[in-house]
Length: 604
Image 1 (cartoon, helix red, strand yellow):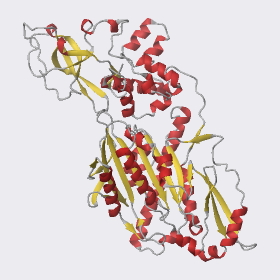
Image 2 (tube, helix red, strand yellow):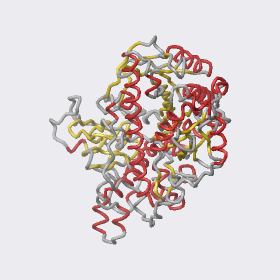
Image 3 (cartoon, helix red, strand yellow):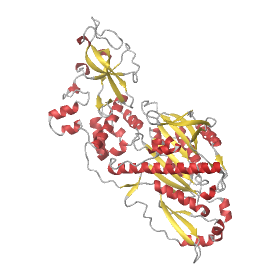
Image 4 (cartoon, one colour):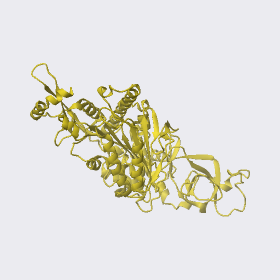
């Protein structure tokens, strides 16, 4: 077949020159746009010198000023000579042979870095036939990312930790710990963990690049018919970014995945049994990966088009492969983390490999899920998904507590749906930019904002704002009882010390008890009653009498509030009681009970 292509190269070039591309019907430009959270691109590498020397022409051509790629095959025909069989494929971005890795980084990958820096999860996949330039692309992007993280224009201090593992079949190895075998396990929260992998803290660009080079030297490679040093395993570089200013928030994650090269059947013809099994495992994991990415993209498209998930959730088989189980956060529809994914399909343009290139482009096109143009939703004061920037700012000013959080700092340009997709650490950091805002208030407002969104989707009980529209004082009062705040009008204007009452949640500091649950030096508790109101036999959690006689200052019996297992949730331990003097109380903390989780959450 290769000899046929070489002999008819001139005829092929004439057919290609005469080809008139038709408008692709798969672009989706008239019906929708690409998914902003899963971007699919292709990179066409240059022709190699040995391919050109043998006389092979190029079989893949990016269509100018579009996101369409034309692919031409030369077919044998019984009559009239060889014929041209043309196909076109649509992705989000196309990078031709003249494009550099720096251009790909600036246009596609660079936005993942501040996203992960702010607490989100960013993932890059490089997929393609062996010898198509995947490792070259990923290694170049890794160096650009290292430069941005260590010396780029990112604001704030972060702690950066790196680990790099290799997945060969169903087995995982730590490339930064002499290829020691590790396990991919799920913890009690359902989060995938690289058990046994060592993390390395990096503080300089040179140290970062040294880790990348060390991992590359230990990665498993082997010779194939297309590449003398083909990567026969998947390599995953995980960069974990800690934010010391918001220790309660989850760490930002950046995953850079260099997938093993896929092989066509003819490339495996000379393999032994072990190599055949290896190639089969690679192709199977890539097939599962395609199903997982597309399944998640379809779920996201449904949510972005309608504002909520209205269809039956797509099946995402992430447990069928060690690769997808490791990257479960990218695919799980019920995942709570904010994720952005970039796929770079690397293509070999040589006409001799046009079959494998066609499969790669078909794979990439299948990953691209077009989001239908969303209908303009009518403004609803209780549905954040319908708010524009002006309406969002007005809600922030009215509902962020006292002092109010600056809406200009929290949402300078975002609409309601955009702010919902913002990573929680970034949300909290923006809140804390407002003077006098405490971490407790920032966290409480973030929970309130999300609860408003969840209540709007589940159509649960009316919020206090919605109850106000009924103009029934009793309905308004009952709605406000879901929060620990005093339901009576004007109570917030009364000085704190004058409105202390049973049921109020307060923050306090005391050295009389070791609770082991203080948060930033502050403890939370719910006031039960005055200490002098209990019987003489009543004791606190330390076994000490509550009524000691001749006490100075007003003393209150307080139920201890401790953090719950869910992030941002709390438990009220009514049977664990301590005595707190009024002078130790710092102020009122508002909490709200959630019936679904049976936990208490901060609110404003």
